[in-house]
Image (cartoon, rainbow, N blue to C red):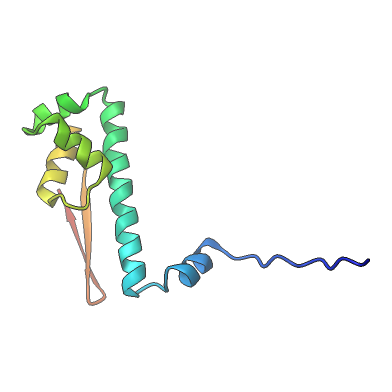
Length: 111
């Protein structure tokens, strides 16, 4: 009995995202990219906080919020204001830069 070997099709990560999520510029892809950035932002806050040897409670005291809010922020940054993010990173002594693109013109804001 002869077995047929199937060739596995190779794809790049970008090709897989285009196929499974949607091409860049589609609503589905924009939502995916936004969610991913927000998750990375929460991880970044937690990582820098630990690097600075601060507890969630200590960071909360620095910016005037409860420990539970820092915990929520590290887990989910979707419902947070830019002002809060700036407060957190200032308390962590980190530089923050925002880049906004409007109709192919890019504006950079450094805080």
